[in-house]
Image (cartoon, rainbow, N blue to C red; front, side, top):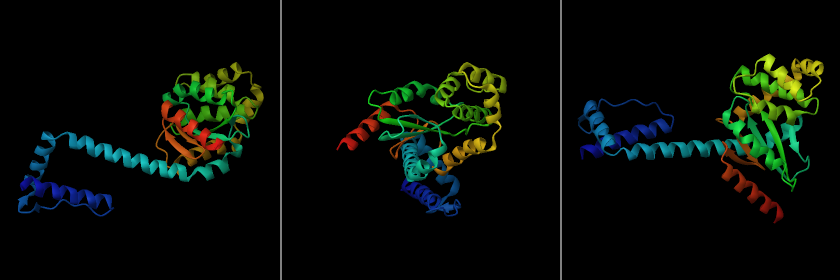
Length: 249
């Protein structure tokens, strides 16, 4: 009875928190003092620790569902605003992948070979649009601007891959210049474009779109409007194949 009373109080507090109401712990519950309730709940959680795992799992599922809803709801806006974004692959490909990427993201770097393999697939049915969501600070923002300046010369893919191969947090002006030279850019034009206000705004817009889509991290993918957070290769490949089947039918 004492445990039931304590847990009922805990659930009531949780419901208030979820509903946005003001949460204030009562001084007593069902005749039990606050300290007694806390002791009972603590003892129960120590004895049944799996309940904490279940609560965390439910919370994570709720977060994923919320993020998926927001990202997929933003698909049309993201697609409409992508006319100035760099893309790789066939322009009229039936499958469009929008990737939110950051050069200081280790998982983004690991995903590059797989991403490029999808674009280079012999079926030529995938177009990749990259949103330069430099959300990890000024270092990644400089790299994103450098990539967009290379895009102005038609060498976005080369610069994108070269930047992803470089170590994270190493995008100093000198390193960026060396990478730009390695992919054969016109350096005078590249430096001029790096300072172009409109180009910089395009990078900053991708950061804003990252927030608008409710994203929590990079990489984040949308495949013909379906969301996948992170680099889950099996999940991504399954979704691409399902999209192909849907198009064929």
